[in-house]
Length: 504
Image (cartoon, rainbow, N blue to C red; front, side):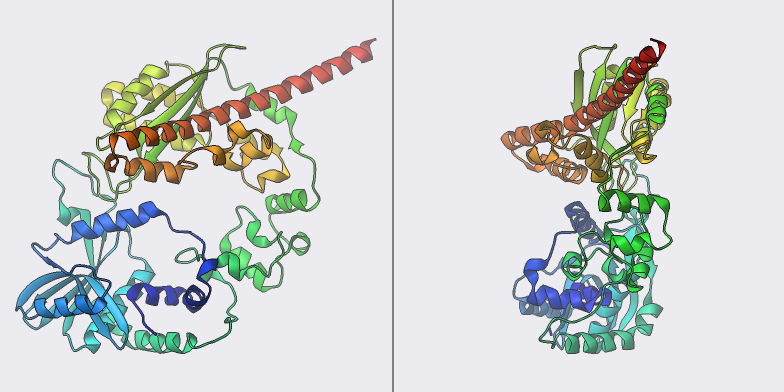
């Protein structure tokens, strides 16, 4: 069986993943975030400069070409090679950075993460195994990863951006483990019928498995893995005890919120609407009302002064507002140009668009408050106004998070992406699937990150897609608020009519 370091790591998580990928690739579902892959590529390219000038082995579909190119470079006494490629008994690997000093070799595995995960140790140990089996004297094995506390100044400082962790002892200790695992994989892949390996925590750790839906097709449609908020460890524990369908779950001791979700879906229960609590929430809101939503993106390698790796950088907002009761719904928006630091212009636009001492509403306001607070820290001249917005924010999520308003169609979630279709199931204007190009926050992040690589004509189309997506986020909030308002008014009018009838 041909193995690469990525396939080996796949099997460290689950052998069946590789078997299914070979025999049933059509059952594979997309689970990876492309922005993570892009970040990893950027980090890898930058890390090549970490130790000075290096020679890069160009990728080639013919892996033997890469191996031969590597051999030529290794004839030099001292050299730094990136993507140095090796094969031992069909076990192939390309080393991110390989330093050769006479007969001594140092192996560096580069990761875009801000921590050293256990799977990285398996990755580097597999490479160490291949190189040592080929007779190379590997004296050092290290993981290179991102320093999350690094703050970008005028110039990017690679020695501060990256942390290098020596794991040589771990790689040495895993030599036999790697050898045994390779034998196990080769034997496993000889199976002709679908392996019977059961599901477990390995399905979600360290990464979500793209074959999870296929491996759970034997379960009833209403099963434990649809329960929102329950820890994965608890789900798999109950599953292995044979408790996974909704009827059986109701007979066991689980959190009341999980039971409530099950009961609503299983028994098709009517919506739960706590009028008193909703009325109490509505009373905390006052005109003028401003509905705010930010879109942000992240940079693994901070490009702007004062930014940390993976810090949330706001590049866009939508703002619907109503100045008085029965007033007209108005809208403002901001979307940064690409390839510039968007924070200052966004902050200035925000304080121009939202007056002081008004009620600003967000859905899951902790995110919006975090963005505003960060802007206030870096722009002291705007701080007072920004913090005034911060201090006058209200969270539209509360009635749904507390399940004062709950329907079976929310499936245990209080995310706006579940709440909205539950409240407005037949309104195409509120359906994110009807949008062009951008349908969720991840797509918005990825789309904006790539905006500068497009032609002017393409940028115009993409910008419009971004604006329409973000606009729908705040329009959805307006519709939800309006729904709550009307429920309270209708109930108040009903109670008033009953009271008047009683008086008569």
